[in-house]
Amino acid sequence: MYCLRLVLFFLLAGLLDAKDVAVLIDVSGTMANYGPWQEDVRRLVTRILWGGALDGDWRQDGSTSAAAEFRLDSGDHVRLLQFGSVQTPAFPFFAPASTVAMPAEFESNFPIDPSRYREARTNKPLAIAVGAHLVSGAEGLSRLIVISDFLVDSDATVQQQEHINQFESKAKVESPLIYSWNRNPHIQIKLLRISGVVSTGSVPIGSPPASDARLQITGAKLLDSPRRLLLSWNLVGTEEEATYSVTIRDPKSGKTILSRTVLSSSLLVPNPPSGKFVWQIVAKLRRDVMVSSPLTQLDIPGETPFGVIALLVLAAAGGFGLWHYSKRRKPAAEQEGKEKSAWKA
Image (spheres, one colour):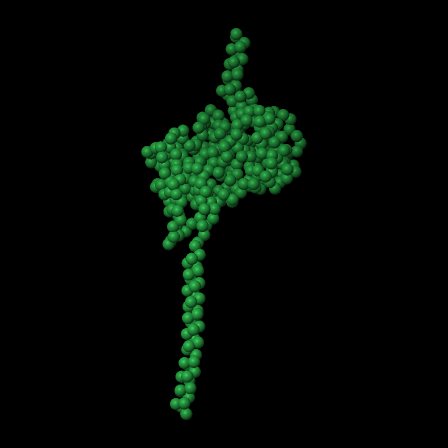
């Protein structure tokens, strides 16, 4: 009985002391240009996580013994987050992270297909902040393995930059070990040890609340004379006051076309560009609770051609009138010249 209790004690202690690891994978388009690196990266990260022997395809900078800190113990899990273009203004900003507990699960969830690496932009500071919060332990410690080319390319909204600033102002980020792929050193794997991250428990910072509050898109109307775009929405399920952040993005390039914060449930955008976009509303309630609307298609047609056609018709009519007047004016001028010549004679 004593031995059984001792085993249960150590098992429980291991669960309470569990420290998950976040693996962040950059799926932006530049990552598809460095050759077939995916299989080598998957093999290396798997060996780091489960304590296997490393191969010789990688240059190592830093303390090689630091890799042992990222090995999974009993009760630990991997949070796999693919980051590229920001998908939503609210946490976790990118596609939801998948959780795996076994090497086979990790390997099957790792994106091997090169066609997956096609997103227009990337935001590594935001991804690191998200990953750190996803696996923050009770002591504010996070372990991250980041796979990227670490090029500078970010396009953050006000709320996303605020999340980055709050993270970077409190967290201490160390990179004790960096792996560079021998075939192309652009491919790097950085092991990050992050401290000072406040544990968020089961509900990450900035995530939508577990309540009845929700945002409904009610309209997007294009007005003429002058050209304006009227966006409207409703916050239902709560009587709280809120501030609203409106974001319009180009889904192909990932570029933010518009980012505004308003107090009312509508926004009038002067002289909007034409094209096919997506837009979303995020309501900020008390206690920094966020509620997001669904990502909604927004088609803005180009300028109407009727005004241009009317101007062309008017110009053509004016030209015809001027030509007709000159034709009538010419015989009259000739007759006047003859009369003057006769008077002089």
